[in-house]
Length: 266
Image 1 (cartoon, rainbow, N blue to C red):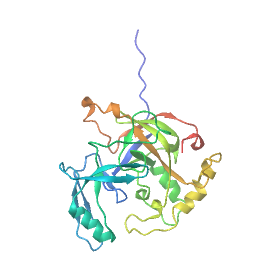
Image 2 (image 1 turned 60 degrees about the horizontal axis):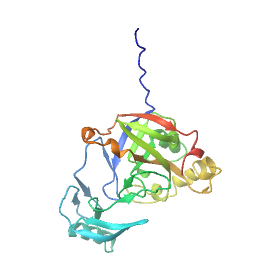
Image 3 (image 1 turned 90 degrees about the horizontal axis):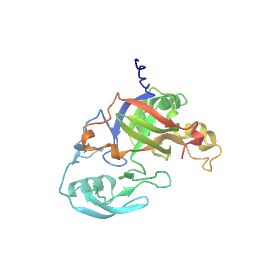
Image 4 (image 1 turned 135 degrees about the horizontal axis):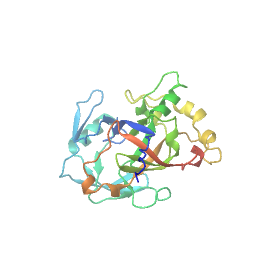
C-alpha cells in the first residue's frame, strides 16, 4: 500500500535582514550571516576607533550595572575609554560582557528555564517585520527606517504586526520563543544617522499602537509597542549544529501563536 505524500509546511515569512549591535546604544550593523570580529566607531571631529571583538586577554572592570544586574566586565582598553571620554565630555569606560564568569538571567516572570542575555535591555533578541514598519510609515509625513527600532531580526511576507502574536517560531532549525511585546522608550525618535531627536514616530505610535488601543484591558495604557522580544532554545545549538546559522532569506515558520495582541505578554 502506497504511503500518502508528506505535507511541506508553508513559511509565514522570511528573514529579510539581520542586525547586530556591538556597542550598546550605538548604530547597528546589518549582516547577512557572518560573525563580525571587529567594529569601527566614528563620530564628528574624532578619529575612527577600531575595537577588536575577538581580543582574548583583557583587564576586568568591576561594578558594571545594567538595570537590575551588577557584575564584572572586560575592559576594552585605555584607547577606547579615552575616545569616548573625549567625545562625550565625561569619564567613560568601554566594557564587554564577561561571559567567562558572569551570567545575566532574563526576567523569570516572562521566561521559564535557563535563558540568559548580555548587555541588552532584557532579552537576547528583538524581532520586527517590514510590514509593520510599512504600516507605520503610512501614517508618517516622513517615512523612517527600521533602524529606529533596533531589531536583531527583521522579517517580511507576513501581515502587519502579526509578530505580536507569535509565541514560537522556527528559523534555520532553531526555535525562538516570543517573550513579550517591546514597549518603546524615546530611542525610536532619534535619527540614527544624525543623532537628532523629534516627536515621531512615538506620537503616531501613541495613536495606533498604545496599550489603550491594542491592549485595552491592560493597565499600561500609555505605553507604545513595536516588535517582540525573543529568546531561543540554546540546547539546539549542539556540536553537530554548530555550523547552522540563521541567514537573510531563510524561511520563518510559526509553530505557536495567540489570537491577538491583547493576549500576548507585554
